[in-house]
Length: 169
Image 1 (cartoon, rainbow, N blue to C red):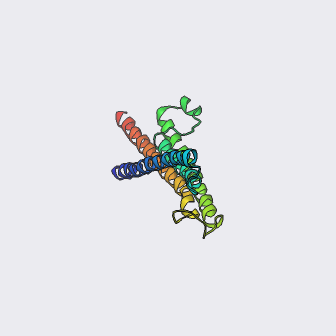
Image 2 (cartoon, one colour):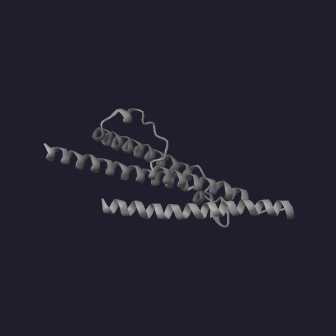
Image 3 (cartoon, rainbow, N blue to C red):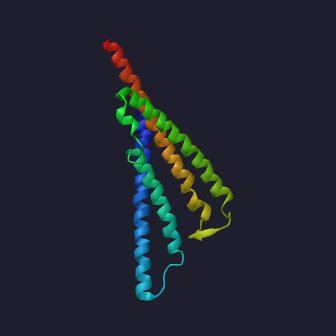
């Protein structure tokens, strides 16, 4: 469990740092575009494209953090009526299901990036379109990792709680 927590903290630190950097860059780019257009009647040619891709990056990194904090979209009407130990197993199952869905979205994202985009298309600053769009499969991979970590934690809690109940009998 210590290894899982270390991986979780490390990924969260990296994603949080990239999120702040991306958000600051996106906001600075947008402000610079407004100033250049307003006062100099020009702008950065690739500024709008960069902002669009940065929005995707910020969205996926935010989705990872929301998944980590259990603030993602979840329908939990049934879990409110379950006993705590059963709820842990149910949460483990739903986290596994979400991880499987993320796996298929990773595959779809990878196909989108590798086959659906022009290999020679350069967006800006020598960054290819494929590189900028890699956040799609990478973002779903980060979410899948988070769901798997949460699934393992739920199973671990359920098993330890079961052992304590058995020992109490």
